[in-house]
Length: 189
Image 1 (tube, rainbow, N blue to C red):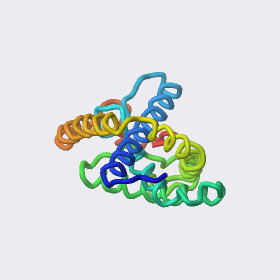
Image 2: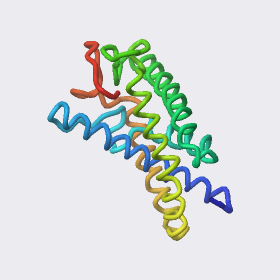
Image 3: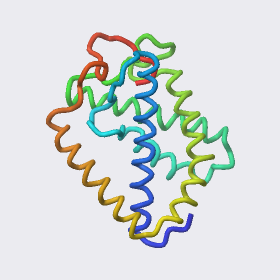
Image 4: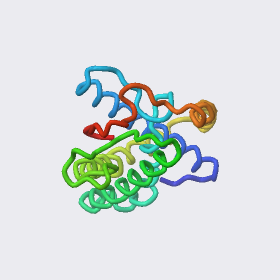
C-alpha cells in the first residue's frame, strides 16, 4: 500500500490496531462463551479490545507484509513473534499487578504457564490469515474511506482507549473468569 503522509500511515496502523484488538477480544469472548457458557469480558481493559492482539497485528503487518506470498514463512514467524509477545506481556502484567490473566500450566509444552505449543500454533494460523488474507483486503477498504472519516474514527477510538487505559491503570479488569490465581488452565489465554 502506498501511504502518502505520516498522518495517513498513523491512521492506517491505529485502525489496524483496533480491528485486530477487537478480533482478539471477540475470539476470546466466544471461546469462553462456548467453553464456560458465560460472557466474560477478557483482558485488562473494560472495552471490547485486547491490546496484545492489536500490538501483535501491527508487529506482524510491519515485519511480515513483504512475505504475504510465502504463507509457511509467515506461519513460522507469526508463531515466533506472537509467542514472544505473549510471554513478555504475561510477565509484565504479572509483575505490574501480581495477577495472571492467562495460565497454560496444564497444556503440552508450556513455558512457566505463560505460553504453550497449542497457543503458538493458533497464533501462527491467525498471523497467516492476517498477513496473507486480511491485510490485502484491509488495504483496499482503507483506501475507499475518505481521509476525513479515517482521521475522525481514529481520534474517537484513541480518546476512548486512553480514557479506558487511564481508568484500568488504577483498577484493571480482574472479574470472575478473567484472571487466574488458582493455577487453573484455559485453552487460550
